[in-house]
Length: 370
Ligand code: UDP
Image 1 (cartoon, rainbow, N blue to C red):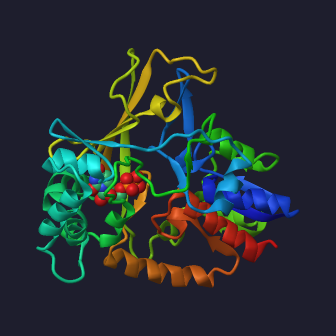
Image 2: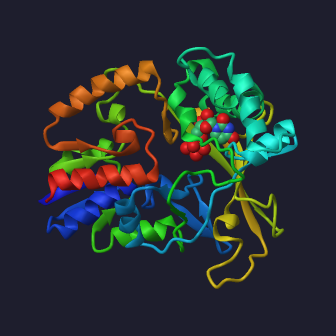
Image 3: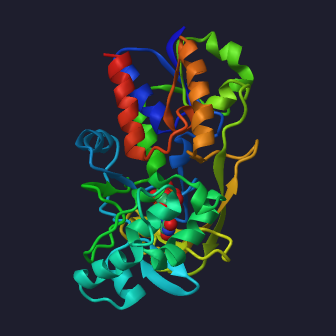
């Protein structure tokens, strides 16, 4: 009998498993996929660590979390500076003086601020949705060219129907600073995320290709307690209805050239281009292999966003009112499952970043283990 069965070997599960083992508990980790690391999984192709489930750039202001992950990997100095491509016009992201200069020809921060001020006037009162929030942050021009199309493709919903907090993830700066994140610490683990998670799980029994929900009774019998990081509605056999998720499909291509787009991420912000962005993985590690040599080839991934349906991988919870209310009902049910802890992006139906999911797992460890 194990003390804990951890369902899912993504960051939440791996952190909990690592800490439980350290605290002297016996732990079994299972995952339905053929690999560990959940959606941070990376796979080496031609010397390039390919982010198989989408780009993951580690960033945090939380020193505890930063020190925590640095136990398992060395981080490089990668800084995320995506470029937006709107019908062939290129803009710097996040919204900063380079963006404002290209959009309006303004040169000084005062001129940029005045332009935004003039355009945000159309929103009076507290922004009620993502569209109003975006216009009130950066004005209509930027909303139309850099936000509306991208957001509607990513979420498959009108910007008026989306919650405003999504856009508050993006900084707006009156400085020439293309760093996408407002974070003290940022980087990519050298050697890839899979290696980092493998280091977390060192010495812990892991069973892959093991579907928990399909073999629940049998697997539950193996442990005192379960830490479940899968989708909460699936756990309860969707009995209150299905929560909505966004899924992402990737079209990966290995190209026989050294440089496709000159940047790790290019967002296609118009409505017509069917993909949301193209990731060129080698630039997460400056185009070098592990020995510091220039890589002759490149791997790109086009990302297509879609509504989740059974059989797809869920990526993003759709945190609107309807889903929030349904999640609250599932959460009540979860609280009645005495020996099961629900955690992570899918277990808590929450748009966690990597650092916040690690912080949440460490918080659980404090309550549960020490
Ligand atoms: N966003 C946008 N234009 C961009 C990039 C992002 O309008 O070029 C908006 C969009 O609404 C998106 C949100 O900002 O859902 C958050 O983007 P982020 O890059 O943080 O999302 P993630 O990397 O988690 O997919």
